[in-house]
Image 1 (tube, rainbow, N blue to C red):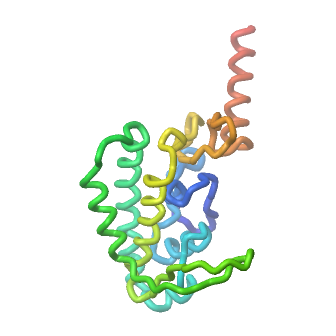
Image 2: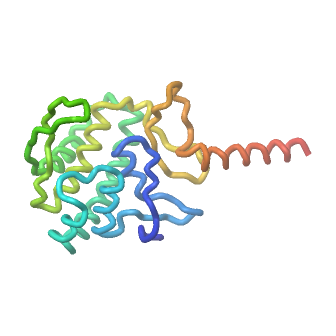
Image 3: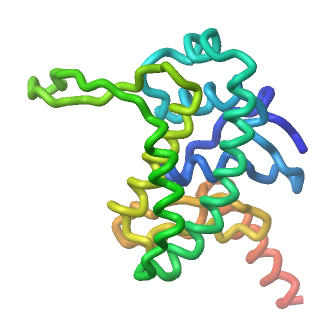
Length: 204
């Protein structure tokens, strides 16, 4: 397996929870891992825009090797979330009490304080910021994204890429909701080329 060194996050999914699922993917058939250790996990959260509160370097300085244990938990959480979200997207009406209980347990690890902030439009809003007192708060950031997905998003628009060798997820925000690929320039083009070659073979 290729680890995250030198590999940039893809960030094609359109929702933080699905970006999290896409932290493991295939490159030329080889599994690639973006959160292989604690430093990589914090850097991924930062790149994905999910890291709240202290900076990435501050999290790394405060918790050091403890972050590796959190990254290991994150990888287990990813496998669990992928299995659950697959079921949820296909059958969202089930209660999923056990899954919600686990998610609530992760959300409880978040420690936040509220602050008033003025937005670009001048309006004041209350924004919650992590305290940065526990490395487990990083998992709560991911849990909030998963909670957001299952409470605010249309499960029918949670999709897997139609590319034959692609494992990526995405949220279909297109107007007609006909998006099929993680990337039109990558898997989409490969699909067109494969279809063209198939038509050539059939013509011969």
